[in-house]
Length: 95
Image 1 (cartoon, one colour):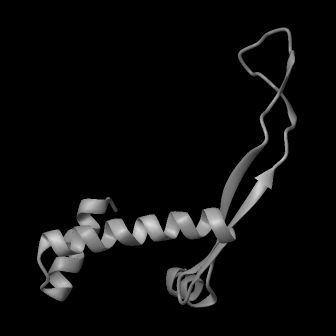
Image 2 (image 1 turned 180 degrees about the vertical axis):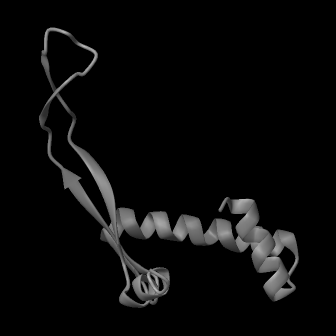
Protein backbone atom coordinates (compact mmCIF):
# COMPACT_ATOMS: atom_id res chain seq x y z
CA UNK A 1 0.00 0.00 0.00
CA UNK A 2 1.37 3.39 -0.98
CA UNK A 3 1.13 6.62 1.03
CA UNK A 4 -1.71 7.97 -1.15
CA UNK A 5 -3.72 4.78 -0.63
CA UNK A 6 -3.26 5.06 3.13
CA UNK A 7 -4.43 8.68 3.01
CA UNK A 8 -7.52 7.71 0.99
CA UNK A 9 -8.41 4.92 3.44
CA UNK A 10 -8.09 7.28 6.42
CA UNK A 11 -10.26 9.87 4.63
CA UNK A 12 -12.96 7.23 4.03
CA UNK A 13 -12.92 6.06 7.65
CA UNK A 14 -12.54 9.42 9.40
CA UNK A 15 -14.26 11.93 7.15
CA UNK A 16 -11.37 14.38 7.61
CA UNK A 17 -10.06 16.37 4.66
CA UNK A 18 -7.06 15.30 2.59
CA UNK A 19 -4.76 18.14 3.70
CA UNK A 20 -5.30 17.37 7.38
CA UNK A 21 -4.62 13.65 6.90
CA UNK A 22 -1.54 14.33 4.75
CA UNK A 23 -0.13 16.72 7.38
CA UNK A 24 -0.78 14.24 10.20
CA UNK A 25 0.86 11.41 8.26
CA UNK A 26 3.88 13.60 7.45
CA UNK A 27 4.21 14.61 11.11
CA UNK A 28 3.89 10.96 12.20
CA UNK A 29 6.62 9.95 9.73
CA UNK A 30 8.96 12.68 10.98
CA UNK A 31 8.34 11.83 14.64
CA UNK A 32 8.84 8.12 13.88
CA UNK A 33 12.18 8.73 12.15
CA UNK A 34 13.43 11.11 14.84
CA UNK A 35 12.47 8.65 17.60
CA UNK A 36 14.39 5.86 15.86
CA UNK A 37 17.41 8.13 15.45
CA UNK A 38 17.38 9.23 19.10
CA UNK A 39 16.11 6.21 21.04
CA UNK A 40 16.78 3.39 18.60
CA UNK A 41 13.42 1.78 19.31
CA UNK A 42 9.68 2.30 18.81
CA UNK A 43 6.87 0.10 20.07
CA UNK A 44 3.44 0.37 18.42
CA UNK A 45 0.85 -1.60 20.37
CA UNK A 46 -0.90 -4.27 18.27
CA UNK A 47 1.54 -3.68 15.38
CA UNK A 48 5.04 -4.43 16.61
CA UNK A 49 8.38 -2.94 17.51
CA UNK A 50 11.08 -1.31 15.42
CA UNK A 51 14.67 -1.36 16.63
CA UNK A 52 17.84 0.01 15.15
CA UNK A 53 21.02 -2.01 15.22
CA UNK A 54 24.56 -1.32 14.07
CA UNK A 55 25.63 -3.78 11.40
CA UNK A 56 29.37 -4.30 11.53
CA UNK A 57 31.50 -4.42 8.37
CA UNK A 58 31.98 -7.84 6.82
CA UNK A 59 33.85 -9.39 3.93
CA UNK A 60 31.74 -10.64 1.06
CA UNK A 61 32.36 -11.87 -2.46
CA UNK A 62 31.28 -9.74 -5.39
CA UNK A 63 29.28 -12.13 -7.64
CA UNK A 64 30.16 -10.07 -10.74
CA UNK A 65 33.89 -10.43 -10.11
CA UNK A 66 35.17 -13.66 -11.69
CA UNK A 67 38.41 -13.49 -9.68
CA UNK A 68 36.48 -13.89 -6.42
CA UNK A 69 37.98 -10.83 -4.77
CA UNK A 70 36.51 -10.08 -1.35
CA UNK A 71 35.03 -6.66 -0.59
CA UNK A 72 34.66 -5.09 2.84
CA UNK A 73 31.19 -3.65 3.43
CA UNK A 74 30.71 -0.43 5.38
CA UNK A 75 29.46 -0.25 8.95
CA UNK A 76 25.83 0.86 8.87
CA UNK A 77 22.69 1.33 10.92
CA UNK A 78 19.79 -1.02 10.09
CA UNK A 79 16.18 -1.18 11.28
CA UNK A 80 14.56 -4.44 12.38
CA UNK A 81 10.84 -5.04 12.78
CA UNK A 82 9.25 -7.63 15.10
CA UNK A 83 5.51 -7.97 14.72
CA UNK A 84 3.24 -8.14 17.74
CA UNK A 85 1.56 -11.37 18.74
CA UNK A 86 -1.83 -9.88 17.82
CA UNK A 87 -0.69 -8.89 14.30
CA UNK A 88 0.94 -12.28 13.84
CA UNK A 89 -2.32 -14.02 14.80
CA UNK A 90 -4.35 -11.83 12.43
CA UNK A 91 -1.99 -12.39 9.49
CA UNK A 92 -1.81 -16.14 10.08
CA UNK A 93 -5.48 -16.76 10.96
CA UNK A 94 -6.32 -18.41 7.63
CA UNK A 95 -3.19 -20.51 7.20
